[in-house]
Length: 266
Ligand SMILES: [Zn+2]
Picture 1: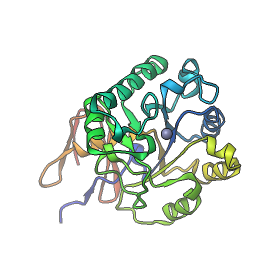
Picture 2 (picture 1 turned 90 degrees about the vertical axis):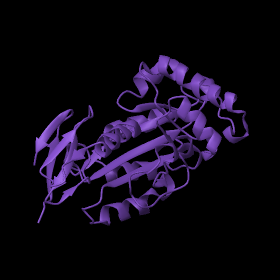
Picture 3 (picture 1 turned 180 degrees about the vertical axis):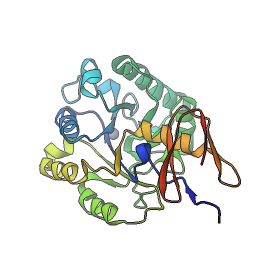
Picture 4 (picture 1 turned 60 degrees about the horizontal axis):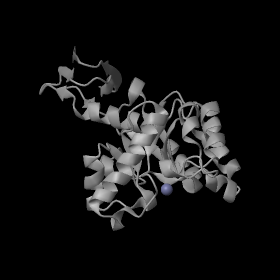
């Protein structure tokens, strides 16, 4: 019998991955980021650069320090209904947001989330041509599976229903699958709906697990892209990793690391 080789491991050989994704960059992000940092959780923050520093939203000048260790990501410059815009304006909304956020963050901004969840075909084409590598929807996918289409990446759930989905995620004992929990929302909701207690419980219930990789959206995208590019020989005895990212796979149930740009005999 050939050995069983499965692409079901995350960074470090982890069985599970957890990520958070927050939109609009309101000042409540400060308290949320502190909570994430205290718990060792990580996420992506999708910001509208035209709104930054308006009193409701964080300032461009605080972005680099505030979101250190997380991902700064685009959400368009002014938060329009993208599907109603001419393609050139869609592109401008995305590129202007990228440009300003890149200056603020100090690195290329490679991703976004869809304002109002709108992801029509023209908007997806515009995002692609503007160098966007993934973009998050608001519709939910309760499969805990990695996405098939990074530009229409459905999260697992909104934070209000996270407690029940965390329970399902942790109860799922199906180790042959690669499992992802992806929670989204807006930090201003905690203030408006008086739900800081809910997100604190959510964070505590999912944090500090040895079998879990806590990652940002773009780290997950980079990892899955590298994983999907692995070349495994027909007899399962050799694997080559042409990417710049270390990848782990299961060989007869054991985690095996395939270093970046390396070939490994299994
Ligand atoms: Zn938004």
